[in-house]
Amino acid sequence: MKLEKIIAARASKTIYRDGEMAIKVFDTDYSKADVLNEALNQARVEETTLNIPKIIEVTKLDGKWAIVYDYIEGKTLAQLMEENPGKEDEYLEMFVDLQMNVHTQKCPLLNKLKDKMNRRINETKLDATTRYELHTRLEGLPKHTKLCHGDFNPSNIIIKGDGKPFILDWSHATQGNASADVAITYLYFYIQGKEKLAEKYLNLFCKKSDTARQYVEKWLPIVAASQSVKGKPEEKELLLKWVTVVDYE
Image 1: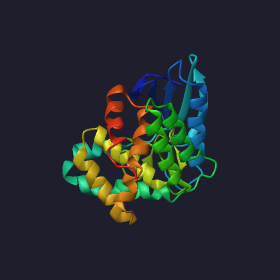
Image 2: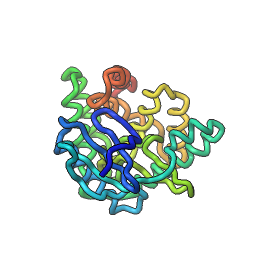
Image 3: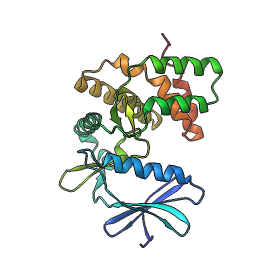
């Protein structure tokens, strides 16, 4: 495998293209368990009806763990939205429809979303009273088993030349309540400084899925606390502001 053409560089990982393969190479100190869990998540989601890149192999290259996938030729939905601002509403419709389709799928062997969020809340540096409130609220919300992407945003969607969409990066996938997944996307747009797009997205999702906006909002403090654990320092500060944005009942 040739690691010459870089197609994306992110914190702790670099993605290369070699012909029909996309090779995600992790930094030397990246957790072996996290790499294998990401590959396992992806393999489990492959069993659904969704269009996603298939895993070819998990290997080691120059002492670094790597996951090799099918390379999907196309542009990300984020690129298309930036290049065609007049088509924002059209792309947002596609985006919401794709996410709703994700939520119709079942992956019974994936980790439970509630378990992950309870663990993440414990990892925060929030005071004990706030953590208790978050745990209590989380336990009080309905338990579902829908497939949740965990990082559903336009940069994780590739649109091929024929218009066929593929969904990338299933490292955060769980099974749980779809409204938590929606809250993650909503906060993603906010952190990117796209407040108007965040509002437009949430209103559209709630309308198309017949979900009460108030129901999604109940997830916001929980999701914000959970996401703050893995966020960059500047993102963490923004996320923690959301922990108290919505009053507890």
